[in-house]
Length: 505
Image (cartoon, rainbow, N blue to C red; front, side):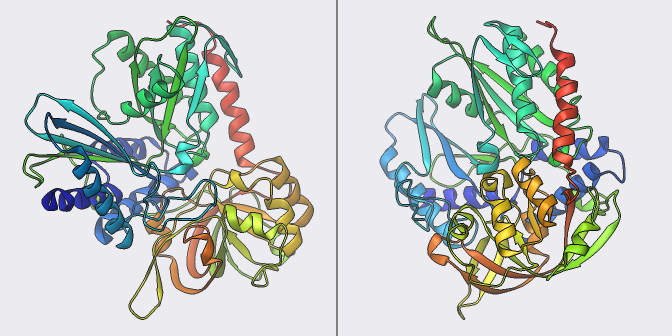
């Protein structure tokens, strides 16, 4: 078990910090398809640079290291309880070492356990088989893409696609709608796993199970193979693109599974995964790793790729405190490079600020929707290990009021925000800046120092970190004139979705 625990630690670290070969190939193909100088090309260049940096630093690809889910096949007679405890110890050690962000939160008290352990966490699913070795697979699926999972009960009516019936064509419509509704909030371009049938819980399990398949495999069911190919072609015609900025690639992979159901229920469940598709596996007989899984085919050496990060809009340098005049001069599409101080704030901070004063003067300042991975050294100094943006739409109920209350001029996040925030930006004089989701190493490299922290009692991801940055790059996607790139892309993709209304299967 000691050897097995060491192997599980290696699996966790490798999964968090290094993308598998099949995922790298899919991202490289997407990068080749995009037109140079576009927002999508800039996003993919940032993603590629981030992958390189995670490799070199052996640090998390994305700061949201997700909820660890293990799928394990064991021979008859293996002690599963001891294996489970060894995995829990490996998880706690990886968290302590900054390879995982502490993500386990008590659902009733909101308290963070600090070690990624808790009731039901990590998720470990065992299956016995007749082979004489142990097959362990791990997926780290972040909250941003997990929140874009969706389940349909057929028959149903779908926006842009009309009625979806209880047949293969109805299933087709549900999958396309699932891609459409995710927009850029799940860190597109993404991968989807689809489960057809079962009940509400087993359908989702089947959908997530599809994410353990290789990107390059071929479905043995001919009908599903054709459907997977169709979805890949159709989804990439929606124009949602990387980060929801528009572009040629919206979907990087689609895998579909089917199971029986009862007559009264017909569920189609979709598990959405971001571009940072972190899943690996190992084979062991004696506890040591004998083979790594998902390593078939050619590797992509992104070090050889040209990864210059350039955008299509004009570039503007900002340093807080920012004036309303500076903000009003910005337009959707502008590329902003930030120097100076920014302050992180996620769900707990926004909820707190609705009814309390801020611990620092936020007038003219910038709030960053980010829950970083942080480590404290022996001298008590904090260091940023990963710091990409979190999904902003969760803060929609609070954001506009908080900006006006404290005089905040800019918000950084990913995926965009809604009508309430857009109206507040116009009234108050503020902008929404979209950073590249998942690019946790790229943005951590922009952070020069940690100047302070408040509300550490909320847990590391939810605390307010005071960060000094240099050349922190983001795109204006919602401006103070009522313009929203997210709104425009959603409207355009809905129009394109309608072209797939007619029956195909």
